[in-house]
Length: 104
Image (cartoon, rainbow, N blue to C red; front, side):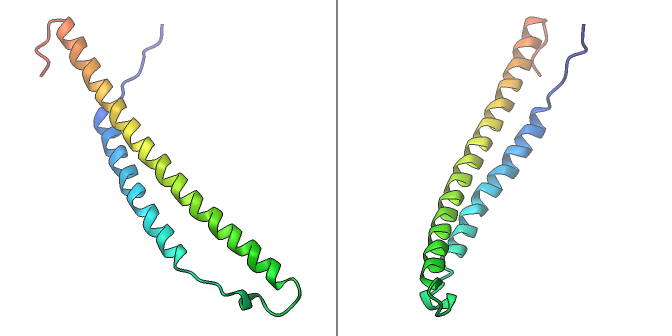
């Protein structure tokens, strides 16, 4: 039989807070990138320059969607980590109670 493992809820909560801070920073980065304006003439006067600008614009729009997706993912990860920590705390308290501990 294995020795099992021990999860430290404080570590999970600290990690959730760190993830939450990153989740708040990512939209700021997205807004900064959104301020970058590349005019159509920036790709030169070659016949392909319009296509390059169109490809750049599509890529920039996709990057903004990526920022939104990453923000959502980090929010979900932070919430899940907090819920996991809460579950570990509740389980520990229930186990202590079941074995006659005072839960403190």
